[in-house]
Length: 130
Image (cartoon, rainbow, N blue to C red):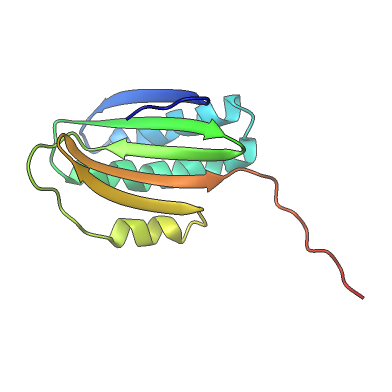
């Protein structure tokens, strides 16, 4: 995986029950530093769900990667588990209900990748029509 022309941050975490909470705090702080304070709550909720699901894969570690570009934030989580990964779409349905732009999951040689794209643009008010 290669990222170009965008800021990024990443963390390698022990695959443990508390990893989702730690990861979500780090992710929210990072996007606030990047100037997206309104997206912090959504980033935290999405990160909690994705990291929690990756921990349930049973790998020894989980990594969290964030990037931002054009007011969109990518949250990418890798489960670092060898062998087949569970293909339960329940977490993606929960993530989608948080109002993310897109989300998905796929399997790679080193584990499962879970991702979501969050739009951090300020909400625009509807234009009144006459």
